[in-house]
Length: 161
Image (tube, rainbow, N blue to C red; front, side):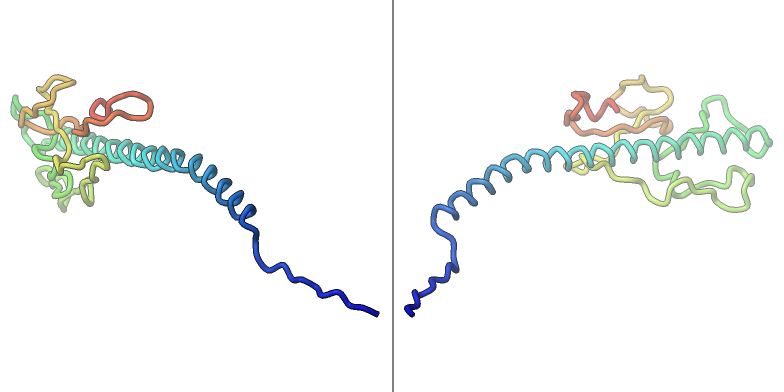
């Protein structure tokens, strides 16, 4: 009885390695653009959420001011709009002439613009400014916008959101 030596196959041939490498490189070249779009879309969602949070806080500040005027806690001057004077007023808060027994705060912190690479911060518009103004009048904070020059995936400019 003769025994033939059994060869163990412990490795891959060069051809198998090359085929595996080609398949992996094709998959990587397909996945990379999708991951870049996903990161950008996530930042866009963060920007939309931050704008919504700040704008809602501005509106709540205005409602509280108007309620204080109705309750005769604040005497409104002719030039006063009821919007916060600075964006930081949303964090610091106000008691609105004693309407509240404490300073009512509207934000814990001001959200950051995810596309702000130059630390410009938010662009501000006052009630007296035009709707598309890029220079803040300084009277109050009626609206905020991103100062990024970037273009969104849908083709719109971030500063127009």
